[in-house]
Image (cartoon, rainbow, N blue to C red; front, side):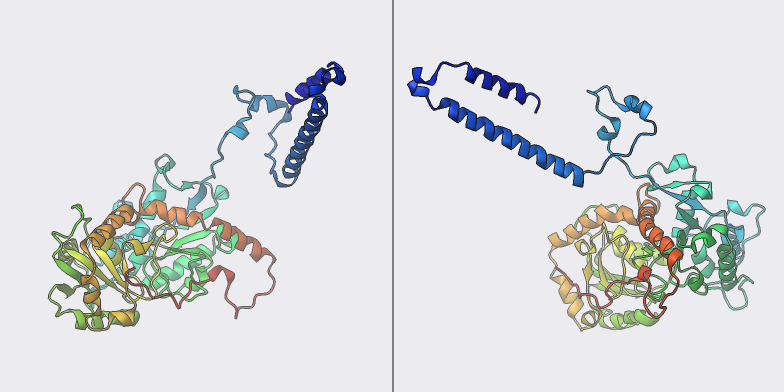
Length: 481
């Protein structure tokens, strides 16, 4: 604006020194028009300045002051005096996570008990034991991730800290899912003296006695309970923590929810498909291999067996977890267009994630299922959802799938390939990083609940806790779209 004022002044001077108007009759109206234009221009400039001042006063957020006013000149870059604060793009700080150094009986001790129950021998250093492979290996991958040096976590959404006073969140790395299966499948009389129930009680007692748990009632703690039955005896004592769960099938609304907790994927047990897109080598229309008889919502499996087992281009087999069965399931999924994913004892099952890495289009028949990472993944782009009662109509399911054109199946396969890293716990930017990202997003709610707890005197326990809001349980029936 400073460059315009001299120009305006000069124009006025020129006007006043011009010859009398009567000697130039043809231009007698110029001074009046010029003066009107100048006044209009000046008024416009002042109007713009007034608007600018108004918005600067009421809508501008000032930058934070520098640490020292005397050093203000040093904060300027050699780029025309532009402040480095104004020139830089702020990056949010990583959430700082402290991992408890739990007594070994909650971590490596469980690995040893699992080995001993299967005829293994004691070892002098239990930290050398390998975690046994199973569908709930997520607890091992998260533990291993935070056990690495911080220099190896450069791509992680969180920063590991060794001083609990610096921590935003506290991770409890108990192997609660492995604990459940220490004695699973053992012949009568061959089980060890190990007790998962005792482990749960001891863990809850140890944890709730910790200074940092008591400081904020556990709101800022993160506990993994991937198996739906993990920590079932003590969940009421630790439910204020962020729970990492495969679904909410065994949790009440006041124990777990999408708001407070994080849904995580099972660790897939099927080898990843490395072939090309297409259906040329996928001669099976629909494939399923798993336990036919399940409890609760999983009872649908037996009904689906009865409807589908005689269809000519459908393979549906009963099979439990074993090395040979996993190989058979890999072959089946890699040669099928669609893979059936019915509910198990709870709404979710590992088969969904096996399907995705096999590029076998999931057909999900589980009305109450919750899926991991839905803030960034649209499962409708690569899955077929069929409401339970509709799926049980004879002939409906196979008729629906046979109508899907080859190009649509290829589109599903391409969409699965784009997201399959999110279900790979070994990928450097896969499942582990995404879980930490999801956990980091809970921090504002955690701080809210901590501060809220400090001032609440009375709670109406008959009302749902605001931290445990659940998604709409009525749902919307989805199918092919």
